[in-house]
Length: 138
Image (cartoon, helix red, strand yellow):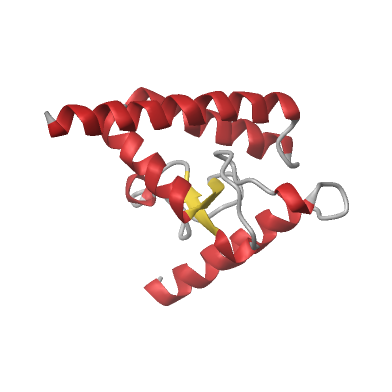
């Protein structure tokens, strides 16, 4: 499958996910957050994150690695933060992916309980990155 076709499938999956997880009649559209708790203004701001990396799935029998079950909706900022966490604190990265799986299984906008966990993980993630950056400077 060509790169252009893969990108189109990923875009289609992202649009389906938005319709599932962000039904505008059921949520406050003035306070939208992505799956890591970061606010966004437009659904165009969301990216598709592979929970299990496409590179790991490359040898699976599936033609397309962008699926509803394997995706999380993140802003560019949170996507960057997540991949920085993956490098410096792999266990925290896996914890985030576990939260994404829970959200996926719910098939709805994250509950208040999940959003409370997300806010705590967001704080831990930002502190972890700050600590890492401070160590690098010294």
